Image (cartoon, rainbow, N blue to C red; front, side):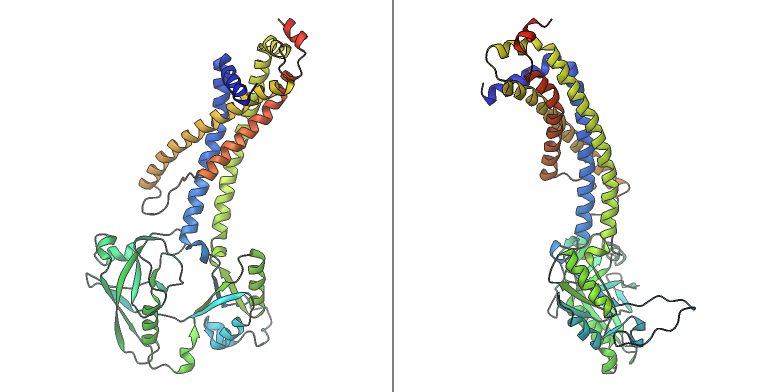
Amino acid sequence: MKFRDILNSAASNLWHNKGRTFLTIIAVLIGSLTLSITMGINSGVNNYLTKQIGNVGNTEQMIIAPSFSSSNSNDAPERYNTNKSSNNTDGMLTKNDLKKIKTVKGIKDIKALKDSNVTYVQGLNKVKYVIDAQPTLGIAYDLKAGRQVAISGNSSEILLTKQMVKAFGYHNAQQALGKSITLVTNSPVTKKKQKISAKIVGIRNDSMISSGQNVYSHGLSQKIIKANQDGMPKALKDRYVEIVATPTSKNPDKIATIEKKLAKKGYTAQTLKDAVKQLFQTFNIATGVLIIFGAIALIAASFGVINTLYMSVRDRTREIGLMKALGLSQGKVFSIFSCEAILIGLFGSLLGLLGAMGIGQALNSVARKTFLKGIDGFTLIQFNWPNSLLIIGIICLITFLAGTLPARRAAKLDPITALRYE
């Protein structure tokens, strides 16, 4: 008997008792449906979080700032050391800090970011607004429209949030692209106002992670800094709000070692991945709990598979005896019943997956119109082939293992005893 014959025999035998088989498949379907929706939610949330912190190559980018020990009135004054100074108490870094950070092995692309303060901005409607913005960190920001700002050169470009686009009087993101806004800044020394024109090249999607800041191109931030520092003494010009670096290794243990080295020198360091690690963990725990419920449903379904196949062995005892009397080996009998178990798992998992996809589309539609309204780029439930194939494979394995006991019993039946069975 060839494998095709075994498969055909298993498929036809499944429907000897349609009601029993159908109910068993329904039990498997429920477990598959729960697992599929849960893993779909996990994929949707994790994909959105990953998208919010930029492309995968930059999630290890490290933000370095001065560290300050918290103390209360009962603590003794902290002794002075060369790693920490009173000059850092305003949160600013100096060239001396930059030199110390550069001595730490394991980091590259070290960049010092200066403060870029803008008094107000004006757009299409000439209304003055305060702007919350930062210089580009070179990551791929999640955009609704347009392109990323330049990370080098002198071009004055800006990414705006949807809120700023609306405030400036543009009807939509496409209308704002290519237009210019005016940034007004001044030096605290000269009090002289300077106007800087910036081209809108992209519109950011809303973010659940960051505060949804506007983003300056490298050239624009340099112009703002130059205007801010007009008339300042050189010592004050060489001060930085933070230092950005990239670890040479993506190994979490090595990154942790770098952070400890920086801590010993008086600095705190955090990667973009660390910043959202807690969010990833929270969502993974929540979906993990749901996966447990899906696993419980599959365990219950496996008992249904065992029961179905045991009943099938009892109903077909004489048939099994006849097959063995005609020369069918124990292995072939075992294979027939094992294939029946796998087919129950396959049908149940496929139907559950298809049902989950249908429910997922409906839930995504409802979510976009209700609790996810205004959060662009977030698809609550996402399905992908690796996860789908994994679910099918796991369920087929579970049903195969559940079917081994009745299949083994069928394989060991004595043909003479089986033929006499009433």
